[in-house]
Length: 395
Image (cartoon, rainbow, N blue to C red; front, side, top):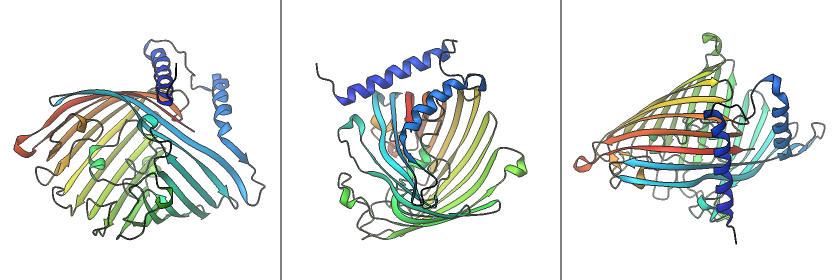
């Protein structure tokens, strides 16, 4: 009998999902407990994950560290809606690459590529590929393929650490993606600032490594932002307030950052002990055709029922658009059953949980999101619930 790599990965993920979720909800503590009294479990995981660091020597004047990096996010979904039903397993993210630190750790190099669902192609395009220069702790300059600096929580934070399966509808509505650019980020006391310029042309043949950075034959986008650290004012572990603006000069050759002329995001993110809260909003103008102006945001909270082991999460999302085709349902997974997929008002409520096996580096998730989109052409609407369960693994 022959086994396809997809079958092996999915079977392993499902087996791990079953073996780790059942001890939590069955009332037995079989998995590693996150407490200093059982540090040996954590040390075992530390030893395994440390294998990804292939070289480390701070005394070397050129190369101080070389580390492999990768992730696998697999998830099962079931959509139950008035438009129809659908369910399947998806290899949501599978990536592999490296990080390197050079010249007294002032230079950081990152490169990773991705596969696709079912691992049909081992290489399906670059994800990140950049060089970052950090002359001191107060400034960082990044050049290469990277994330545009907007959407501080929903976009700029790693998907490894996010407590939900997907970003909010309003962010996904904006069609923001990685681009080749130059960014500068700085810090002055409690203030942070950030700016960037990005090429609006990328190669759409993701398997063409020679063209991964694009042709630079289109217009450019720019970003500006400012933030403030409120943690001392509020006496909490973390409290960030941030506003970012992304402007795109679009032309006929633009194929990234191409849906709106201007996008503004605002973020308030506070965390202390066993709880966290995020409020993030977006406003986008200058859309073409069916893409009318939109605004929206989400409120999200987490609470550790068992500190560092079992966490609950809830998120309420709202979006509103200018015109009956201005908003879209979530590409994952609502669009797979909705034949219209357009409207002017969107509400969604997500409730779920995370069980941490080794922090965000190895965890399982489960949740459900109810969503309603209405105000579409000819009074079309979407009303349904998506149920999800999955695994997140990264190193």
